[in-house]
Length: 83
Image (tube, rainbow, N blue to C red):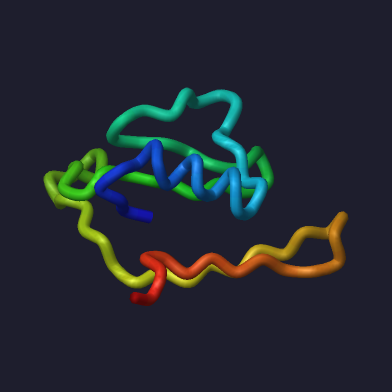
C-alpha cells in the first residue's frame, strides 16, 4: 500500500481493523510493515523507491480481503477509500 502519510495509514489500519505494526519493524515516516509472521502488509510513502530498484512507489487502487480464523469472518480493506 502506498500513502502520503504512512504513519496515519498505519494508525487507521490499527484503529479500524485491529491490524498492528509488525513487532520486529518499527514503523517509520516512509515505510512500515503491518501484521504478523503469518501475513504482512507493506506500507510505503508515495514516491519512495521500492528496494532494491529505482522504481518510485505510487498510489493505486487496492482491495485486500483478510480471513481471520479466530473470528469466523473476513475484513475488507479498500484503499484509497472511494470519494
